Image (cartoon, rainbow, N blue to C red; front, side, top):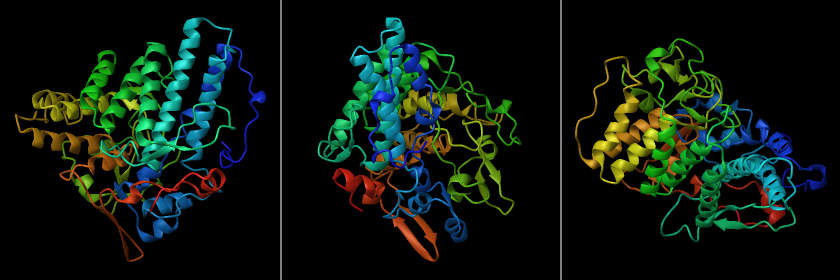
Length: 435
């Protein structure tokens, strides 16, 4: 996990010799590299919680303080950061992919080799996608072929010069890799930290939704739901429990977490408007949040099974993706049916009333509101803000106050794209993101 110097020191590939599927799988099983290395900065920036001045000042990480106020000096090069950690996963995945391409992995069946290749493609794509959400602009049909994305490291050879691809090129590569992974991956696995075909379909649904390819997102969500559609009845959970959700619960398709935590309660206080949006009969109100005893509330726990932040793929997200796509494609009734299927498992028994027929615009707004409430603190809100800010009807202005100073983030502001760590800019010469 000593990743601060990841881009300063070139690993010696001779230290990693892969000759069998067992070797490759052992490398892929490193959860500190692949499962806990995904950016947290977006959650500090997204506005779902607020901090008092003294609590903000007490945050130990510079990146957390600066992310919260959309600052210009987010990443201290002495700290692990949201740039270096995902690229460690990218490098390790590339080691395996290069070994397979070069015919170095000889011990194992073709099916076994195909599966580890699919896993490596999945992990690499997941890491690159995470980087893209933090360090690049949102998808825009008119500008993504020229907007700067991130460096696409597709080889473990560090002698290849670093350059930034366009946003369009980045998404094209991620989608290409995931389409290949769908073919290569196994149908099932005993470990939810290991991707399957279903996970690949679910991830494609997330990607397609983020770039506005709604028919493809709907189709991918349906493919995943065809094999994994379980929903937890929240009435069966203990709302008084410290951690009411089991890790690897039945909704989880692929388990991954953000690499860092939110501050402990009562420090991060849930946005009052967000908390008030949960009906009193909505069990998420008491399962997701805990009272601070002063009229404010903090986040309690979610699908990580503890106070960590789950960023994986789960059934509830798929229902919401498909519901949104149906609404955007003019199939409002189907969208509301998916929303009802989800919410009927979230409210107190027999208290939920299904939605009636309504306009496409009204249905879409309700679905997006429920998406925010269901997927809170999943590492998705920052991406949603960026994509929805492209639509004036859904754009929001974020405001925060620290030390009597108000910080304002307008829709499509340059600060929706985080600055690349200065050490990376100095070493590679790639272009910095404007602020």
